[in-house]
Image 1: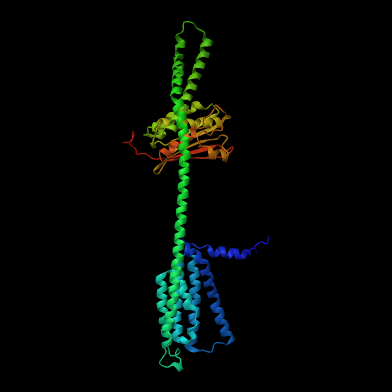
Image 2 (image 1 turned 180 degrees about the horizontal axis):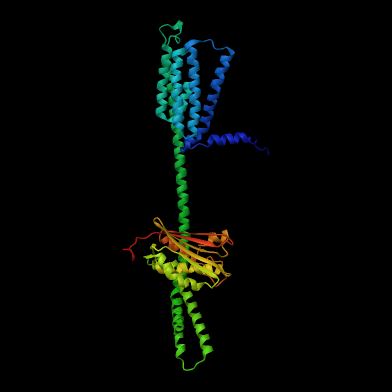
Length: 460
C-alpha cells in the first residue's frame, strides 16, 4: 500500500511558526498563516521586480513619474512587512486595515501619475476587496468598493490617462467598471457572510456538545456517588442501632473495673489481668463506636451539626489523645498559631477525622517516625496540613485513597471510610482535601476550609 509522502521538516516548522500567533478569533487564527504568506511574498517580490526592471533598463520613465513609481512600491513593501509584524503580535485586523489603506493611497498616486490606461489591469483592487471582506468585515468591503471607482475616475481625469482617440469620452468605461466591481463585492459579501455564519453555527454546536458531555459526566458522577451513599446508608441504618446497643453494654461493664479495689479477697495478679482485659474491652468498644459514627456520618449527612470553633484550640485539646495513639518511637509535633483559627464544622466529626489521620499514620510508621500537624490562616481560608514520615502511597493507591470502602489494610483492620468521611466533611464545608505522597516519602494531607467569622457558636 503506497504511503503518503512525508512533509519536509523545514516546511513543518515554517507552518507551525506561521500558526503560532496570539489570536483568539478562530476565523482570524485560520486566516493568519495564508495572510502572512501573501504579505511576505509581496514584501519580497515587489522590490525584487522593481530592482530587476531598473537594472535591466526596462523603465523608460523619468523625473516625477519615476519617483512616484518607486515611492509607491516602497510604501507597499513597507506596509506588507509592517502588517506581518503586527500579525505576529496578534493585531491581524489592524494590520490588514493598514495595508489596505496604504495600497489604496498608492493606487490614487499611481493613477494620477500614470493614468487609467496603465492601471486598468492592476490586480490590486481585487486583492483589496478580498482582504477587506475576509479579514476586516462588511463595512470595510464596501468602503474599499466605493474607493475603487473614485480611484479609476482620478486616473481617467489625469492628463496621462486619457486616450487621444476618445477625446471627451474619458469616463466612458467608468460605469461598467463600477458595475463589475459591484458584482464582485456582492459575491464576496454574501460568500464571506455565509462562511462566517456556518462557522459560528459549528462552534455553537460544538460548544453545546461539550456542555452536554460535561453535564452527562457530572450526572454520571452524581449517580455513582448517590449509589455509594445509598449503599452505605442502608448498611449504616441496618447495623448502627444494634451495634451501638452492644457497644454501650460493653462500655458499661468495662467502666466497672474500679470496683476491683473494693473486693474482699486480694487476688492481685488476677485482678490486674482482669483490669487490663476490661481496659482492652473498653478500647475496642470505643473503636467500634468510632466505626459506627463513620458509617452514620457518611450515610446520613443530616447528622452533622456544624458550629464555629477554633481549629487550633481543638487540635491542642486533641494532642494528648494523639500522643496515646503512638508509641515512644514516634514524635508528635504541632505547629499552631496563637490567634484563633476559626472554622465552621461539626466539632466531633473534625476530632474523629484528625484521630483517623493519626491512626493511619501510626499504621504507616511501625518502626517509628514523625507525625506533624500544622494550621494556618491564608486570606479567607484555613489550611491544615497533616504529615507523616511513613511508608507513603504509590500513585495507584493515592488515586483511590478517598473512595469509600477502599483500604490497603488486612481484612478486619480497616473500614475504608476514614478518608472518605474526611473528604465528605471538607466538601460539605465548602473546602477541599488533597493528598501528596510517594513510596518511602510519607504522606501529606492538606485540608483547606473557608475561614469562619470570629464570633464563636452556631450559625444563625
